[in-house]
Length: 430
Ligand code: IMP
Image (cartoon, rainbow, N blue to C red):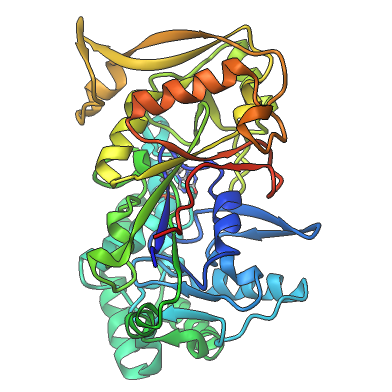
């Protein structure tokens, strides 16, 4: 049985929520393997709206096991808030259907404080983070001073680790002119939350191994997108984890063959929140119109998303660096009614044509898109459930995108409704 990883192939917000939900109804286990509560999506099931940031999408469905893997950075307070909000809507959430890797590093108040203080100090050069402490928490993990979920079981260890953590962070706060923290600022809230979160702690790699051997279908739910990947994205304007599917295995404690099919999600155009380069950005009425039609506002921060034409060079790069087998193309209906539609098929850098997105930040900012222009379509694609219902020009657009990105479109989403989805390839098929 093929396990499936779903990842964003642009800058996040590609509409993963709907696709993951659609696929999770057919999976037994849903695993988050990176990121934290910086992600955000809204699910509508039987008319009830659920907003999720940290919890895997499977949590709102009956008889699924939801897993937070070791590759995530875990804010215990955000976790309990989200669990309670879902419970209030009548969904049963217990350690039977939701488990968290005991070796997951924690996001502490010190991390969000540092995230915000640093962004403020950077002024115009800021990254535009979600302010949730994601970057500083990953830094502590890699620097081997993180406090992990399993540390909450041993108070003596916890006290020692908090002291070491604060020696580092208070030096940074002093340098930034931000208020310092005392051990009690960290220890008191941790001791209070520990009995609420520890029941969910589990040896995740072991349970996943057993489930895999029992033939259960596992869905790995990626957050953010390839262009926000710490290695392959628009560094330094990225998030602090590997968002590509290669991390699904390491971030959950499984081997590289755990993932059978990688589904990349991308919009029929491009959006980005936060700062950083964006070659196809439209700072004109067309960009405004795409934003309005596509309701392009962030779920977590409410920020307006920047909008632009589809960048086939970038998505092709995401296909290659992430091992994407097929694409789910979303929000095609937002392009309905345009006279013409442009697609970026290459870049010009200092007068030379290139067919990839360079790594150097200066070059990333300087590349100019080379466009191909398509005739638009007047009929609507919204709500289409088969190829036959799509206008001929829209089919042409999709087929050309497949050629440019060198990957097939496996799924086409034509509205936020679950059933408005055209399936070409079943990712879960063997
Ligand atoms: P951080 O992940 O909060 O450190 O933010 C780093 C960058 O990633 C910023 O540009 C954020 O806007 C972006 N980002 C983080 N999470 C998401 C997401 O779920 N969707 C889109 N952008 C995100």
